[in-house]
Length: 252
Ligand SMILES: Nc1ncnc2c1ncn2[C@@H]1O[C@H](COP(=O)(O)OP(=O)(O)O)[C@@H](O)[C@H]1O
Ligand SMILES: [Mg+2]
Image 1: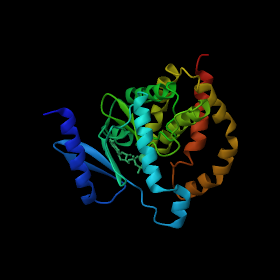
Image 2: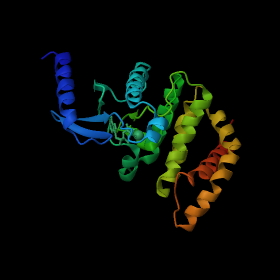
Image 3: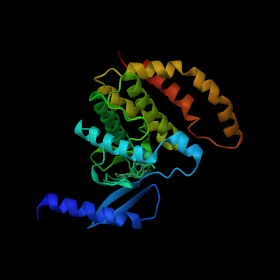
């Protein structure tokens, strides 16, 4: 059978099946032995949600366009198998890093590759916007970036790209403390491929963001009182400290 014909049959079958799926935001689905992901248009239930997050139809169309544009530049993002005003159907790229870290004994090697992949993405002039570890998949070979909704850009400068790197490191420090020791691997991979000189910008941002650290101090204090030892707030001073310490040991 013509492979294009088969592909359009698969797209049509998945689009027919999508309305019968539970209406979660993102749902995995199996078709002819292959796994796909159906990402539905986000429902804006309240006026506040609508104002804060904007038009859901436009957001879905924007993500579709960004996925196509990132792929065209050679970035590893999920391939769009089908698209409608209700959902985007995507190829599967393995477990996301939160799951991978639970099981692997090669966390350093994988995170080094993730750092390299982020630098390669930046080298083609784009930024992800929020490359946290739950938005990156690993299939034993390739790191694939998901979820291009939050601030992805096709014309990104070093500031946005430095922000990407900091947010990736921050998301690792927001996860379980046992994974924190792998943070240097991300920077090793990134800095070795940093053709755009983004790393010095990331260091500058980390050094200058003391006001943010000051702002979250009372929140961290309250969380500590309640027995919490790890959170996105805790991860802010940890990320700043880590970036500054790493910078002081990187040979220039
Ligand atoms: N193409 C895909 N391959 C593998 N896992 C995926 C894929 N798309 C989504 N996922 C899984 O679903 C989760 C949510 O998807 P995401 O696109 O990030 O939606 P959301 O906007 O709700 O965060 C991801 O963190 C990942 O675990
Ligand atoms: Mg996500």
